[in-house]
Image (cartoon, rainbow, N blue to C red):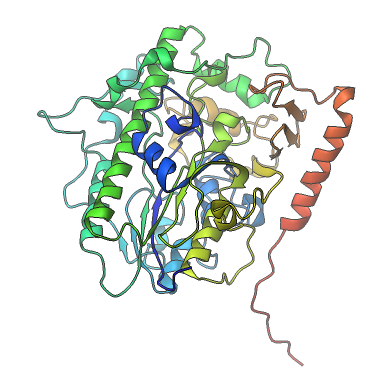
Length: 491
């Protein structure tokens, strides 16, 4: 490994499904910049999984190397506290210049950002509102579009090249920062973008770029929802999209794909900026999302907090190491978790972590030194019945007029819908333990859409016992972390 510490780019789109990339065989996905990078000088982990299927808990996890249960980061309103480790803070304290341009969903805003970065970017030109800034597209309450999140084509203003929202502002700010980087220290650029998080809307040319005829098959909603989490059926009923035709679903899905295509274009712009500055080879690049999105699968849109379908938990993860690090570019099918990102950054930066965490550096997989480091991955969410402080009552979206009402209204009720749950997934099987509901067990080879819950199948008894044992071991190994600095004992 080179003695010079590499620059770090953490390019982190929000809610990008792991299957929407061209190099993974999705013919409808327009991701030429990512595809070329993987073909020539990066590794795309086709079996990467997040540790929670919503924003804040997932970000708290991959920025610490902790699973959400380690310190109770299981809601959108319980962020990393000042005494807890954060990868950005670690990099800053070790001598990196850290630039942060984009959303938070990580640390409490009331504490500020000084501990975590040198610059929390605020664009000089005020960005336009996200997805056009109005909700005329929603239709009337009770309509089948009111909770659909579907905007469609966003109009650009005055023949502008693009719709200048916060993502464009932050990407352009990152490019400017690359041009004006420090001369005397390595830098980390953290770009947590909003796209392709719904509402589903994007401007031209990306709106029309997606061939609707090449979209993969959508997973249909179950007829009875038997064996599936009750939260899904409740959201399905309250989102009220049962009347949607496949043509309408295709338009929504193509719009989401167009949002991903726009992010790919912005990613390519940042890569070109690194090349123009002459620092591309000495920069490590990480591209990954925090979680996925239903995008019509199961007749649903958006996401949930305690169900673990692959469309929610399977995420893109692409790593380009700096020149000098051995690499076998292309698609790698090893099971990996997002907590492995922080461990890989620390490895590249020569940082020995000062806290126990559970990530594993991806460099041995990237080089081809090993073929696998994990035989299972985990994701978790939900709450105990008595945890009223986890109901997210603070959110205005829990009101019936809010876009998120179909989900949040169920999360704050006293039924089993928001039960605490954990997923254990191997390459072939997925087991979900639910505290207040029936567990789930799927044979993903025979049932890749996760529609046939075989939890009561006698033929699956041995597999069920093995998966349950994996969950027990997982919790025993990760149930707590002991500080690395012991206290002095008094007399």
